[in-house]
Length: 303
Image (cartoon, rainbow, N blue to C red; front, side, top):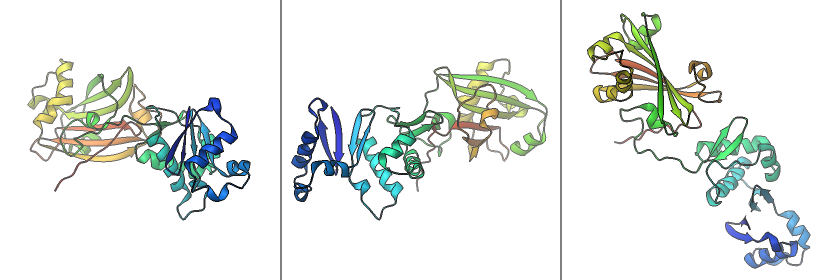
């Protein structure tokens, strides 16, 4: 059985008994007023003038998209796909038809289709995986706490569930870059790499710079990697007074994440985070790299 949409009405068709006459009879039954003036015309012509969308187990018929309208073309396509995604019982990560096939079946150019798909991506209804296609997103998490509250950026923004954090660190002498991000000279700095793993795959990466003075003041034992990880993952947010964030796009993620590639995307979200404890100088500086497709950045403001 397949589903047809016409003028916001759902029709169920049993293909075992399908025939052109059966099809038109169903239309005339459902839309008696709409087709009243067309009963005398040739049924084949009526079928020809309807737009039929057939792909991957669902069928959509939409006459609106073929009519001239004041709406922009890509908005019409967007509305059609939006309705299909919202009303079809399609599973999470369901792959849409390829862009050439979809554009052909919708009767629009690939440029128009891509504009509509971009809007659907902005709305969080689909995601595009380079080289694989467009996939429906069903199970978005509605995070109640966004970046307006102190806390770990990765866990508040990433949609994947983290099951393991892989960490490396080393100590480096002072450099001009350290002075730039920390606001002052330091005797040395601890450089920490963290890869956030989900089902064996790296899905986010954080590069951290901590001045050696912070290590000393918080009595952190660098020989105990578990304690160091606990401090930078949790304790630092409980002990700090405030932080500042700078949200950017980065095209260096493919090599900046070092050991693990976290996404095949050309760009990543880069969130630079300076963490303070009642001083003008940060006690730590983080660079969080997150894949755009699996990241939801929310800031809940209040008056």
